Image 1: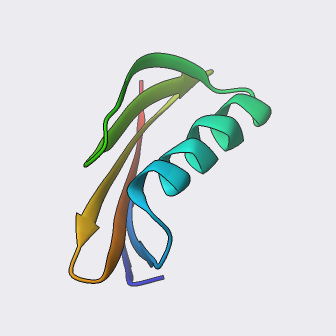
Image 2 (image 1 turned 120 degrees about the vertical axis):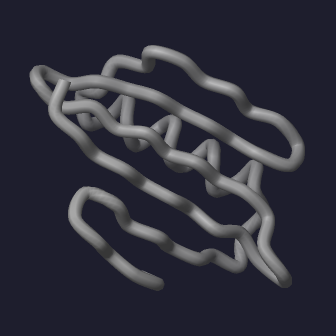
Length: 76
């Protein structure tokens, strides 16, 4: 983990944007999250999902020699 502040977590991975994005798409579905919107491109992945009274936004993008992941949770 790179950092965590309030409901936001920043992570870094050596895997590609597409691989990391696919992981989060699958993980959110497995954990019972309903996807509200999703964009999966070569250079970015953006997912907005909800579960009960919670919302989450996952943003995946390239950074330097790896991939950055920003996860933000919030009440809905």
